[in-house]
Image (cartoon, rainbow, N blue to C red; front, side):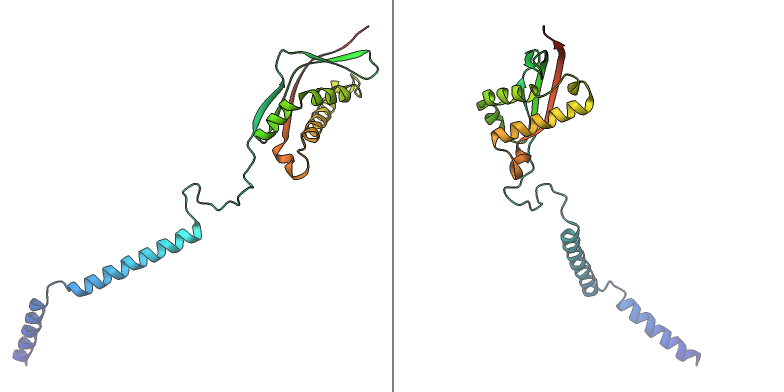
Length: 178
């Protein structure tokens, strides 16, 4: 029996020596399957997670986010004076500017500056000095100026986001005139 075991061991040894090389066909199959899986996983993850390249997001046309543009209506240092309610007090506006959402309203503000100044005069003639001397009164004034300019330029409703967005003002003084 030991001779038979030796013969079997020798045959196995010879077979492993002959076939001891790398199985090239099996290796190629394994590599190609792995590569195909990697490509498929890449496309699946890319579609699920999305791309990190800016500009590839689908945005509906015509609904782009508004751009903020600064418009100086009363430049700093101009010191426009408006009469307040009762005719005894005046307010001195040193600066009035708007943040607007489009170039179209910038040109509208410039074209309709006379109407806007007249409307500002009408707005201030309804105010008392005490109303404009506190933060709540100033916020109300800014809201009213924004709404007034948007009304004059036709930027109301859906178009309001492309109109005046924010109002900035610097009041130099509120004083009595006798």
